[in-house]
Image 1 (tube, one colour):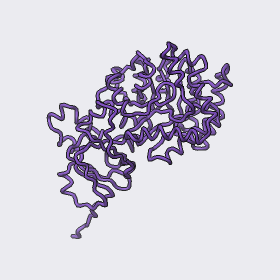
Image 2: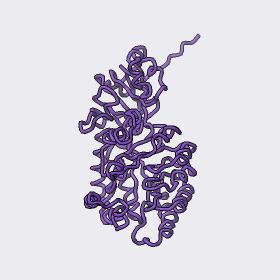
Image 3: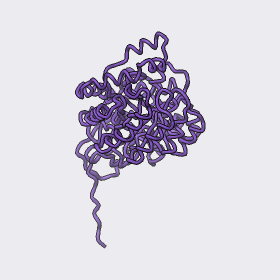
Image 4: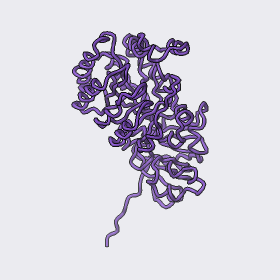
Length: 431
């Protein structure tokens, strides 16, 4: 009989002496065997926790993870060992809904709202999105890049390794393309994966003020094909709302996007129930976002279409809204719930993903587990990258955040003191 020699694994990096929240509940034997009764009562199995653990990285991917005691029985070689000193590892965080590329700011509108004006009143008076459009069109490419880089750096420093960036403040082909090129360059400038979303149907520009159909035709017939030909976007979004676009106009954009093989998303049910989420479900959208006025038939449609609900506590807070998204209905129908900063100049000028974790719990009554899932595995699903990001599992990208905390709930419990001690992007330490 011939003995077959199996080569021992050669890893690039090995983390040892860490606790891991894999966010892959029940997928690893080590999770189930290494959790005490007290930890189980705290919901640790749902976090996919492995205590006293190790995790190996090879070629930017997770090659192995498990208990330290199991590591002792493996013959391996490794180039670098990192002693985690019993800190906690989670997947790198994902901000799945932002508008961080824009010109100017709207602090004057913030003051107007505090004087009693509503978001809708300001928008109808020529403020809101349209005022940012003017500033964005006038801004140079370098001005947009410089300001957006500051915002993305703030998110990155809190553990964000993947972000979605929407256009939508240009509203003409040249300006929309300029925004998307800035988003693309940000991915080269910082160790962050950037998913780019074309949101040309964000508002009606002034030159089409009395001709919304004409503008939608421009979006579908000219802007979208050009964006697709230049490879500037990964998805298409529409603001379906009484101050945005009708169901008919939204569907026209979705049909044009489908012909170009773009996945779609939707801003829906933020200010009223226009049934936008239900329409998006018809087109198997990745997500519906905002959703304060979402009703049960919309939730059911999202479940049947395997969509993700992206909830935005920053906008709820900043606009002083009182209508909560229907979290209980989303739970009832097992619709995954992601959370995001919605970082934008008008309704959520916030660049703190850690603040969103706390707000999701305090304002939306998420559990800390739901909040962390909302910026990891569910956020990955909202961007269509859940087969490579959002959890710590063999074969997944080694996007890993290291935290100086005693338990995962701390990430949602406090904000203002950043517990991030190290950040890995595709196997490289970047912070």
